Length: 283
Image (cartoon, helix red, strand yellow):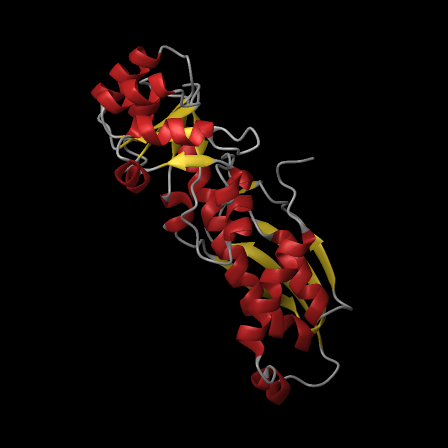
């Protein structure tokens, strides 16, 4: 299955909420100003360079509000588009298309923003051997689409949900008493073969978690010097992930320490929406 596949049910769930939120009793402005049976031909245009994500969502919105419209996708998800490029063309009933405009653009701008920022991070570590991961730092209700946008940008998904794996963090360690004890308890639990990852703040914790049998380690907010030492200590016995305070300015140097993965919450938490417009060709 393609990494750019998104479940129709995930699209439908978001569209249900988005349309209910936006439309209410209907598009009063369009009803009042646009003659009945008017048709509209428009292009969905990039007003800045971007990586596209969300065209299947646009397709679903158009299908619901303007079922007789024809939507031609010119730039599929995952495609890099320059400023002025065309993402799609739509022709059909003006009322339905204009009613759909804001919800369609909001979603497309949001998801393409995530994909665009993700691509920048991916390109920053190209050739290092490190893989960019996302996190669970997503807007509630939009996780599946947000993580789909990460894939469109070339990133890799970490846990989708809590039951996708065990990640022992500082609060778990505090309650368990130590990182070694937390790892041992997790390894002894009946989890059906789920891998156990432990978050480490120090080299001492790295050694302790490794000895306790952790399957992978998350190295949190470590300097590049300490990351390099941690890589040497582990010596490729288990995968290492770096996280915490990663930026486009620092990710390359982090990758060059030899870690296997770098997780960045900013790609889903703080990605700016890109600028996309619906421009009328003729009406």
